[in-house]
Image (cartoon, rainbow, N blue to C red; front, side):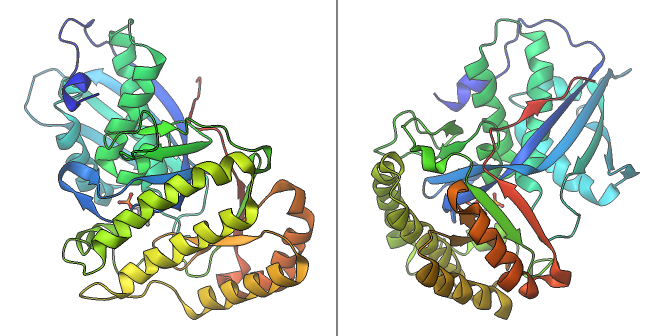
Amino acid sequence: MSEEQFIFHPDSEPIKDGKVTWRSPSNIALVKYWGKKANQIPANPSLSFTLNACATRTSLSYTQRKHYADDFSFDLYFEGSQKEDFKPKINTFFKRIAPYVPFIKDVHLTIETSNSFPHSSGIASSASGMSALALCLMDIERQMDTTMTLDFFHRKASFLARLGSGSACRSIEGDLVHWGSHEDTVGSSDLYGIKYPYTVHEVFKNYHDTILLVDKGQKQVSSTVGHDLMHAHPFAQNRFDQAHENLTKLKTILVEGNLPEFVKIVESEALTLHAMMMTSLPYFILMKPNTLAIINKIWAFRESSNTNVCFTLDAGANVHVLYPQNEHKVVYQFIKDELVVYCENGQYLCDRIGFGAKKINS
Ligand code: PMV
């Protein structure tokens, strides 16, 4: 599918006033996206677990504008209060997506949004936030184009979300989502995420992700800057090739439920992501001493308990502890006994693999 196919149908019904609400989850990458080309095209393909508890709920009210103007008219409320400082990001998003959803210039939009996870927890809300907004917009488009298929709805929602924040395109459908052209993944595209098209072993159903909040502060280096630094990075090409290879290896691992091999790829991906940060120019480190302390504890516990607990990292210091349902009891006890002490104010979030975004009927 090409970008042109996402251009809005000119013969659609006129827009009416209304309100739609969606709840969209966050996601955690197993194979990481790091580095991008123009127009939010990823430099390498990625694969993620969709989360369940960490989500954004967004309502979008729309009323016809009295006078047409070539700009966007919107108000933005975050957790009940007007948020002027979020508006430039949304304005940039609207500019990027306007060729595909031109009706957004015909209406005044009121965006009311809130997260299920605490603000300033160091958990990025861009994936859940941008996907929730993209889904609201697609819901409006679907009301004007009643012939739209569900497949197209999902694909275009992912396509629009990608233009807001790359990883947001992996937050539409669960439970595993692949984004980016990959020779061994049928139907994969750089333009949108797809539900993982292969069989996945039972052991990956109900997988747990306990998110340890090591540092709740603002990151020193944004993802945008980090992605950009991959342009002149001495190891970039090898890294991009490695992501392709890891996805090919995972295909068999996911079918077989081979947890020891799963652990190796997932942890290597997390550490490679941070190694790219440490070897770019300028270089930077987002891990904190407690991130490393947790990693070492996990390695020691895995060895002594014979479990398959492992970690992954986002572009930050927090640690995602991943483990299967049948190890939940023993691993969760270990987390409480030995890892929570490294969290800021002892805070952590219990999440697990989820099944994608949901429309909320008001
Ligand atoms: O979606 P962005 O531009 O915030 O980039 C996210 C990048 C990582 O979270 C570090 C990796 C990933 O694939 O989600």
